[in-house]
Image (cartoon, rainbow, N blue to C red; front, side, top):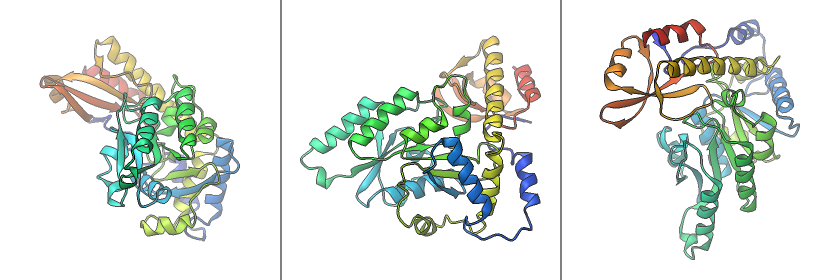
Length: 341
C-alpha cells in the first residue's frame, strides 16, 4: 500500500533516532534546561539571524498554537485568522476551549489579505459598542497554509505593518515551515519570518522529527512566566531533552533544510507526472501538498492501493484529494503511484 496521506506517517529521520539512542543514558536536567535544548536554541537563533530570539520547545502543533495564543491574549481578546486556518477548523475548538474566540476573515487559497484585515480592525474600533465585543488581540497566519500556498515577502511585510499600527502580534503557524522555505517559488526566508513576525513556530513533527515544534519569540516578547503558562496547559515535557536533541540534530549541517528540499523535489516530480497524464489540480500549490481533482470512480479505485487525504467534494461526481510528500518520500513510490494512473 502506497501512502501519500500526510507528511507525518513516517517516524523520524535516521540521524535523529541515532542521536536519541546515543544520548539515551546521559543524565540531564529536565523541563528543557539541558545542554541539547540550549545548543538547539543557539542554532535556531543563528538560522533566524535573530540572536535575541527566545525559544521554547513543545510537543505538537495544536498544543503550540493553544499555548502561544492563550499566553498572548487577554481574557477579552480573540485571534484573527482565515476561515480555513488550522485554529479555525481542525483543532477541535481548542482556542475557544481556552476562552478565546477565533475572529474569521475570508480566505484566498488559505491566505488572508491585508486590506481585509485592515477593514476588520477599522470597523471594530469605529464601532461605538466595541467595548461589548471581543477585541482582536493578535493575528494568526500559517505558512504554508492549509492549501499548501505561501505568503510572499510583500504580503508578510504588509500584514506586519498593519499589525504594528494596531499594536497586535503577528503569529505564524509553521507546522510545515521547512517545505515552505524550500519551495522553488518563494521569496521568503527564515530570517524574514523572524523579522516580520512577533512569534512563529518551526515545525518538526511534519519535517523529520519524531515529535516537536520550536516556538520562537522574536522581539524579546515571550510572555512573562511562560514556563508556568505552558505547565498550566499540561504542555511541559519533563524530559525536554527529547525535543532538544531532535532540534539540535535538525539544525546541524542544515539537515532541516536538506530534507525539506527533498520533499519539494518529490512533490514536483509528482506534479509533473500528474500533468503529463492530464489530471487537473484544484489549485496551484508550490509546496509538498498537492490537491488533485479525481472523478469518484477513479478515487474509489485508487483507495484500494493508495492512502490519500480526502479534502472536499466540489460536486457530486468529483473528489478533491490531497497528496502529500515528505522528507521520507521515495522516488520509486512516486513513480509507482503514477504508474497506477
